Length: 365
Image 1: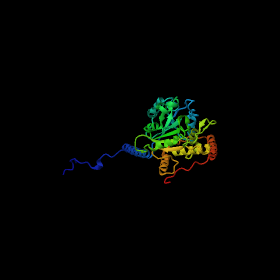
Image 2: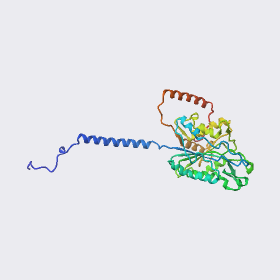
Image 3: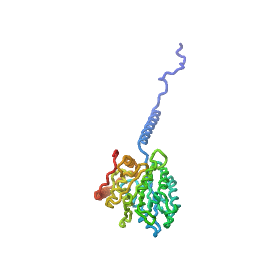
Image 4: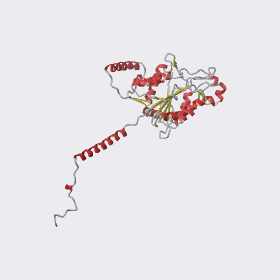
């Protein structure tokens, strides 16, 4: 064979090898892929951020000749939410200007406020993993075996015979459960009336009726809509106190305490269980055990102070309901660190002046 003839095949040694510039691009591409995989792993392991929204509906005026208006019907949310900042936790988001200071004067206004919640939440960017806390203030009354929230100007006959001036709590809870959030927590400060002879009500068992309503609500977390929690200001036929000195109902003051650093059971976050523990602790101390808030959970079959398997499971679920997490740490000067240490000591002393809360149900009890 003539060696001068060109071979149709090139030796691999004759192929062009990568230059230094090409090696740089290959290295950068490899590093980019690795960084993307690492970031993806971190995001998959990090749970999505949940947010808590706060709204209130307060019925503060009733006809004086029929029943007294509830004391301290409004609630200064700015002071309440200030406890989060002092504790170093992210604050709840108020649904201003729609419901943060709502005071409906008729059944129609109330229905409009309730119906607007869904749109307001979506407008504020609420996701299906978030939580809504709704503070409900007014008078509730058990009429014909059903608990109603009273609204508007009425006389005795209108109250007993017309739905125009009362809203069944069952309807309110059903509407709240349809909201596209993970949890709805109702702070039901509606238990001021223990009796109302003018309407033929000798014993006004509002918390008991709420418990029966919540027991029938579906607690299946896989379905669409929210899981419903209701905290009543007291148990059936207990007094619902108020303080002229603090200008608060006891329940309002207990909620403020539960979100403050004085009640910090967990310095890193606030769960629904932590919040309820704070309510119990403050209420027991301030009322000498005469006023006990009750926590009901949809489908649990009773309140969470009961010694039952369903209450124990609901308590475990309450520990998983995230209400607030810790804010990112900020650099602190030596002076601010000293002030923080002094505040911490003062808060510790104040916490020590409060008794421990009642024992919670434990799994398997």
